[in-house]
Image (cartoon, rainbow, N blue to C red):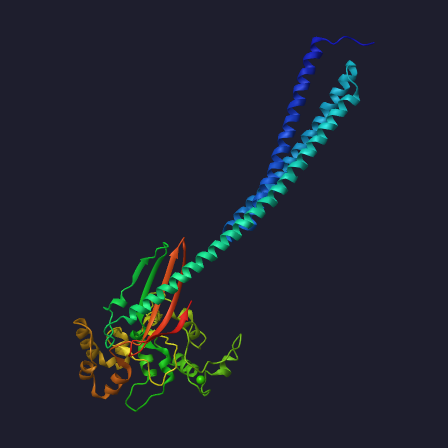
Length: 431
Ligand SMILES: [Ca+2]
């Protein structure tokens, strides 16, 4: 016999319904947040694959964080759904049966339908995320390729601007109206910074290579009993630069440069290195080649911060020496108008300090136009050294051009030779 529903049953039924709806809402929110976590995690993962290494790690960590949160939230949603279906669904079904207003099949039907629609929603969101991720990746890859193309285009433009600047620098050198004397007060010696019509900033600098002593002079044997050899000069210059034990280094470099294969540091020595290589037996082409020679390395020339006076730094040698990449029968001379005190002192010998001091004092008054003042100042036995190693003009110049635009830059360097007739040729390009 069925009894009519009371007011108490009606309130209880409404409360039951509210709790059931809230549970359902919570389950849907958890599902939604879990699905969003999948989407965000996927987006960060794709982004990490496209970014630079520094930022990629952070994005991978963020992606992993969302990936951990996703199953937790999805699990919570499933749990709440199960809770709702297990207790509230059955409770209502039993009440409904009691009240006789609805059948069990009526309640199971919508509950199962909502479960299926929830799963479909999750699948749809994940699918959307995958599609969005793929679209995003394609778009970012296209942007990256475009950026790469623009970068290459800018680099080409900068390269052309820098090469043009080198050409202008060569003209400036050729336009020198007095090539019998070179000094650092000449127009070509002043660095220039210009902006071309395309908005590219170009810096250019010409440096006299004859201000330094050429490592390649070591390949030339001494010519007489009283002459200072290139090796003597290099040894003094290395001492002055802070290298107090240069003997092995200099012997190894001489072996590297001379044509013969007689010596401790020839090809048999370098074949024992890992990887093995051979002695060049010719002039150095670049500074970089020097680091293959026994005793030389980048660390050797790197400035060191220490209070220990014996832990010398040879970084000053970078200014005192140069590499002129040409074969020669006589030394590449040092220009007394541009050379530093150490170079002048090393060429003449460290006991000729007074002569170098006189030369520097004379130079302050203007460029020295003859070797005679220094010939008068030095020991008579060193006359041949003055003639052999000193000059008042320069033959070799290092030209550096740097073009800058859009946050990018390109640098080109060249070594040029200018002869007595003002004819200029590039002897080496350095990119
Ligand atoms: Ca050799």
